[in-house]
Length: 203
Length: 238
Image (tube, rainbow over all chains, first blue to last red; front, side, top):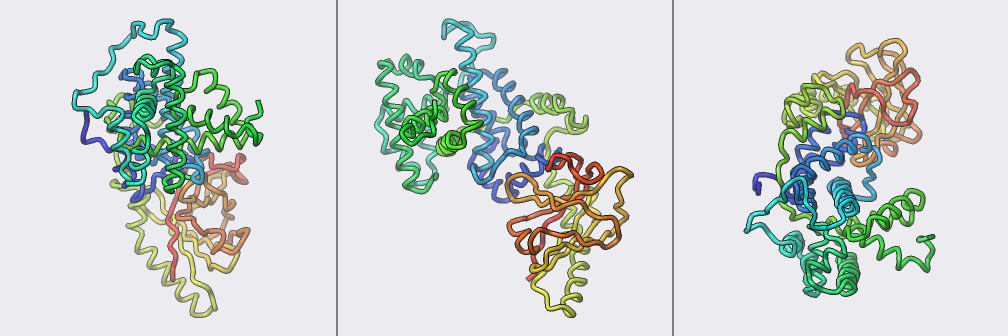
């Protein structure tokens, strides 16, 4: 993987110093250079997110392009009161990636059907979804929140979040009944919400 | 389905969580997005969950996308060819607007001196100064204001008169969110631009101003439509 590329923690630092939100405001003013700078600072994280979910480089590139075209056109609708810039950008990429995945599920009858591009193989030392979930928990309180989840809940949420697995795919992957997996996800999310909101990590 | 009714809140919370996590079936995803467009309660629930979920994703390792991705974006948007070729490089570290502002420190000092002089003769609250410079870093306009007074005084450093049929519009750039129009800058070497409230209030939490080129009379949309000609940081003098 590319360790030179900034992760979200580094982006957060950049955000403080140069102001991603200010860049977004400038993009809304059709400022090309602000757009370039925003891309330079955040595209690696966003590409990483798309790759994780799609596991297919050409598809991730396509989604990234679509997402940035959308950012250019809709930067004016970014509302700082509702989200952090990175959250807003990540949501666009995640949602487009997930839509792309789900669209394929409809088009391709067999979920394991042939794809036009080979799947990306992440290196063996690449963190697993659960490790990522814990690593993301840089803030002590977030880590504590993730730790309160039961193993099944943790794994289901991590796989869904980082690899874009649907309920049905989770059930298949974890070899558990659909109902069990759904309830892991639901209870896990409820627990996270209570814990995160309580710790003031999110509102 | 009216998801914002109190008795449906629980169901909404679950749907929003699954939407943000990405496990909802496509039909439900599409439907939620559609409902959120007209129902602020639903929109807020989705946004809240996206925020929570985003916290989880901070450790995803970054991967630098191949240069063709940027070229594709620049091509699709018809950005200038140079931008497509040079790729996204840091304009913060290049001669650009912000660096221009640093270079314009002489102008700031000058403007300050003027303001200080003015203060001697007027019982004014602390002033605000904005040196508006172009991409060549040359100051074009200097805006000053006294906190308690509802107008900005704009002094042209260069001849900034726009072409026939065009106006210069001044924008407040909040740290976050869309620019807010402060109005069309009247013609003249030194002009006053009225504000809706005293400057200290109108420009509270506004780190920068920008000037864009608009059709005569100002942007028809309420948001900037033309290129940004000048911009500058709001310096608060104490």
